Every structure is written in structure tokens, then in C-alpha cells.
Length: 134
Image 1 (cartoon, rainbow, N blue to C red):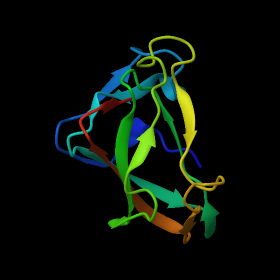
Image 2 (cartoon, rainbow, N blue to C red):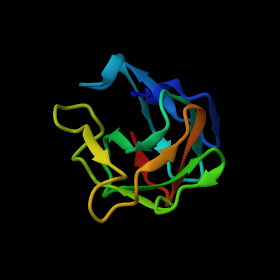
Image 3 (tube, one colour):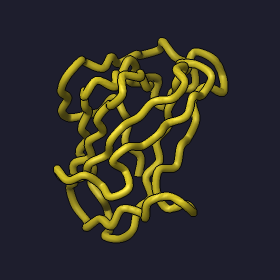
Image 4 (cartoon, rainbow, N blue to C red):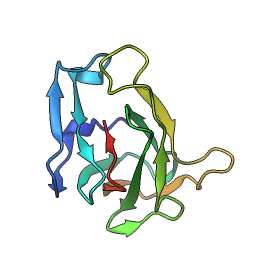
């Protein structure tokens, strides 16, 4: 299942900006940028088609030295995702190769996949430690 970042349903704190046509290699021609690590948050409603274990990935760009975020599901912090470190990708998504797919769950040494029931869920990502993340 694919969830477009710019299709968030709620937000709080410093507004993240939606860039249409301002970055390269974006899926659907748009992206979220200037998502600041100051406690600002974005939330998406996801419709899970079948109950089971689901891995979580994020496609990001980060021109800082890295960025940190917290992940919550249905209002509860996800075990092991209380402080997720996203890598520096070499830029903000204005050049080829600056968007990276980052696996957050399910690989060796990472938190377990998310155990989800079928139906609607809310996924929230909150920015911490002041760095930007696209």
C-alpha cells in the first residue's frame, strides 16, 4: 500500500509545505518539504486491506546531517520507533539520487513489522531535534 506524504489528513505545529513540481523524482509530482523537527507533526489515515504484519518504509530526502522523528499508530507510540534516525541523503530532493527509500521495520536489528488489523488506522510522524526532513 502506498501513502502519499502530501495526502496527510491532520497536522500540528509549524506547517510543512507541499511542493508541486519543485523537486525532482517525486512520486505523483509533489512532496512534503520543510517538515521541521520542532514537535510539528503530520498524520495520515491509512486503509489496511488485510490484517497482518506490515513493514514501514519512508521515501525521504535530507540535506542536513540527518533528522529524527517519532512514529505513532492510532494514538500510541510504536515500540522501537520512539526516535527514528533518518540519514542524510546528500540534498533536499532537487537532484537525482537525493530521495532514498528507508526501511523502518522488519529488517535485522530493526523493530518488528507493524501488526495491523484490516481497516482504517492513523499514522502520525512527529519531528524532534530541530532538523528538517523532506
